[in-house]
Length: 366
Image (tube, rainbow, N blue to C red; front, side, top):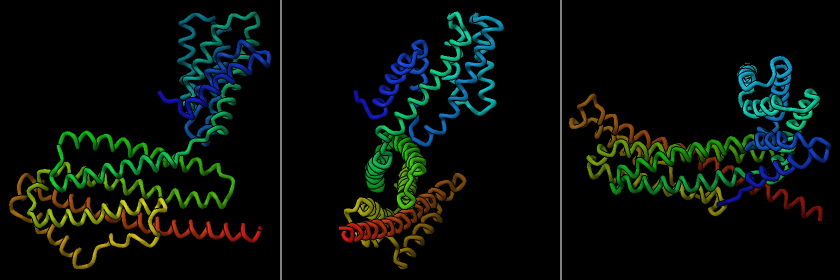
């Protein structure tokens, strides 16, 4: 069992939401405040503040609907159910779908309030709900802000390493079809997580106050975007080799050797680019990815000659198309690596020049 930062923050927000209302003379609002604090927790600060307005409005509308229906028709369970349906329809029409759960909870709690002054009690509960949202927002924004860049880098590094292993095994015909299929499905889900972390990084950068830091972060985000795209290209290559395994196994030995040699160059380049981005390889290194003219001509002509063989010209040319798909996947991976190498080189030069400038300023100040 692991208690992470977000788990701790949720617990702390709930504790504060339960504690503060009684201190302000609203003990009956503690439960709703605690529930609202849980619903208020969002994965990024930007989403957090965007949701504040929606949740406050949604809970207020839920409280108003509860008051109207309870005063007009009572708190019979059928009436509460019908009121919940009306509330959901209203919030859906206002595009507040993500606050429906919390608003309905507010409606149900207020509907079954037994206090003498029903309207006053309902108002207190609405206020407590808003208080819980605000408490959850403050805790989530200013305490242990999530480090999505670290998560993205480690996930991307691990996923890329796994893909490289599978690609090397595939071109040597050492893979098991069912195991690779299962792992590729898992890797696909990991790439979706990478996209999500990248989105969180973009949102987090919007809240950065320093313009210089914002620009530096944007350059870093651009590199991470290409890192993700390169990982996706590696996944497409591994998936293509997997789906066209039967065709690849019937390639001539010369073509298989040519593919293995080319992919080994690309995979080694990928590994060194990651080390370069991490500051462990010189920025000017990794210049061996691009083809020499003669080698590229040999690679292209060999593939097209293979695709034109009579043995592939059957079943609507599916096998012939598979040959071209394999070549296309290799070239797509190569193009992404070349662009990634250019971006990382530019970023490392910029990063080092910025550090030198900062050091010079500090030396002058001293």
